[in-house]
Length: 586
Image 1 (tube, rainbow, N blue to C red):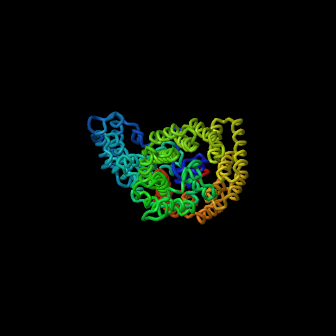
Image 2 (image 1 turned 60 degrees about the horizontal axis):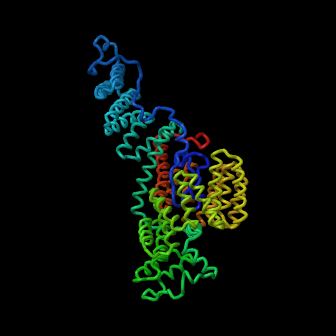
Image 3 (image 1 turned 45 degrees about the vertical axis):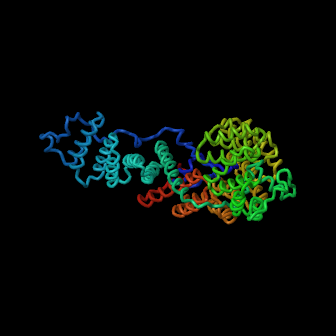
C-alpha cells in the first residue's frame, strides 16, 4: 500500500482527541491502522486521577476509635447535622489512610445517613469517599453505585467521574467509561495527560470490540476502481496483473500463458481466462465467480492463478478469512511457480499484519525474501510492516533494497524518500533533510505520471510549513489524475491546516465523494469536519458510512474509535451543556 494512505498526524494531536474536541484525522489507512499516543506519552499526569487512592478530605481529623462511634456527648450538643456528618467522614478518612477500609465504609455510611439532603455537595463527597474505600476492596459494583449517587448530586464531580469510569472499564461497560472520561477531558480542557491516556486505552478496546462485532455481520463490499487500481500499483511484480497489463499493450508473453492451455468445458470461457478479461476491463465484481468456475474443473491448469486472483479479490472485498485460506492452499502447492508463491506470501503477510499478528507477518515476508531475494515487492511491503511496528531502520533498509532491485518502481522510490525524510526530520538533521528534498525532486522528474510522488512531497512541504508550495504539488497531482479522490481529500486537509477554511475543505471532500462514493477516507474526514463545526449528529452519520467500507478489522476499529469519541462528546454536550474547546486551545 502507498505510505500516504497510512495515518499521519501533522498536528501532533491524537486522532481520537481531535474527534472528541473538534474532529479531523489528517490521513487514513486503506489497509492497516494503529494508534500512536504521541502527546499522552510525552508528559506525566497533572492532576489526581481515578488511580488516586485518597478520599476527599475537608478538615484535619483526630485518630478514630475502633468503631465509628458518634461524636462525644458533650460535643454533639453543639454540632449541626452537617458537622456531625463531616466528623464521621473525617474519621472514615483516617481509617482509609490506615488501610482499614471496612471501618472507613461504616463511618461513610453514618456520614451519608446524617448529612442533610440539601447539602448536596457534601453528600456527593461522602458517596465518592465510600466508593474509594469500595475500590480498595475491589467491590466494583458498589464503586459504580456510589459514584453514580455522587454524580446525581454533582454531575461535574471529576473524581467520581474518573472512579466510575474505572469501575465501568473493569465491569466491561466501556461505553459508559468512555462517556465519563470524555466529560473529564472536556472539564479539564484536555490538559490532564493521565486522563488522555485512559481515554486512549478505552477507545482502543471499545473500537476493537465494536469492530469485532461488526466484522461478523459485515457484507462484503467491492471497493471503487480507483482503490483497486491503487492496490495493484503497489505491486511492481504482481504476476497476474502485470501479464494482464501486457495484454492491454499487446505484449503477451506466451511462455507465461501459452495458447494451448485454454480450457473448454461446461463453463465455456467463464473460467480463469474470462476472469483475466474482466480484470483487464475493470469488471472486478465478476472475477470471483469466474475463478470459482475454474477451480471446479478437475485438474485445471489454472489452479494456482485462480487461487491467487480469487484471494486478491477476497482481500480487496475485506473477506480476509477466505483470502487467507486461498493463499495458504496456494503456498502449499509443491510445483507452484515462484512468482505466484512469493506474491501469495507477501499478501498473506499483509493479512497477518492486519490482524495484528506481527510475528506471522514477518515470518511470511522473511520466507518470501529467501525464496526470491530479487523481488522488489517483498522488500517494499516488508518495509511498510517495519514502519508500522516502529522499526524505522529496518524499514529504511527494505525500501533501499526495493529501489536497488527495481529503480523503475516509483512507489518504492518515493516511499523511500518519505521514510528517509521522516527519520532525518525527527533527528533534526537539516543536511539530510535537504538531501532527501532533492530526492523528492528527482522522483517527480523521473516519474512525472506518479501521483504518489506529488502527494508525498506535498505532505513533506506541509510538514515544513510551506503550505503554498505543498498546494501547488497537489494541483499538479490532480493535473496528472483529475479523478483521484484521495488527492482531493489530502488537499482539503492542507487547506484546513493552512487557512482553516472549512467551507473549501468540505467542498474538496464532497468532490471526492462525487468521484468515488466508496471513498472511506473522504467520509472519515468529512465526518470529522462536521464534528469540528458542531454538527455532531451529522458526523456520526458519516462515520456510519465509512465503517462498512473498511477492509480490515483494524481499519474498522479505528473508525469506530472516532465514531465512539464523537458519540460520547454528543452525549456530554447534550447532558451537561459543556462547551468544547477549539483546536487552538488544545
